[in-house]
Length: 158
View (cartoon, rainbow, N blue to C red):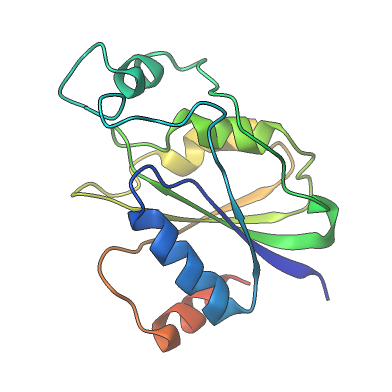
């Protein structure tokens, strides 16, 4: 039986808490996707068209650099991939993560936090970044889920 990984990007800490609880509930390893250059509060100001996050999200080819790599990715059959929804899609650092590995044959289960939008076309937008992997649109996990709820979510998609 292959192992399970929870990989996540969290700009403000909200997605990190969900990822930590999911990893615990699923008995999974965990990896934080950290930008090589951390985002400042000003970088994340979506109301400023010139903020770093706004500029990155306007450019579909933007691939923010990641600090570090997940080790032994070949050991994982299922990867729960978490992120906040930005501009109705995954932040482009998620594409950077996916494109950094050979994920052929792996199941990628998306989970996200969002201030109000759903997944939209996120799964379809990420598919070209991980050819040969199966992408499953998991859940928007806002609020506080119990360990039982997260364990059921993990079982559903594992």
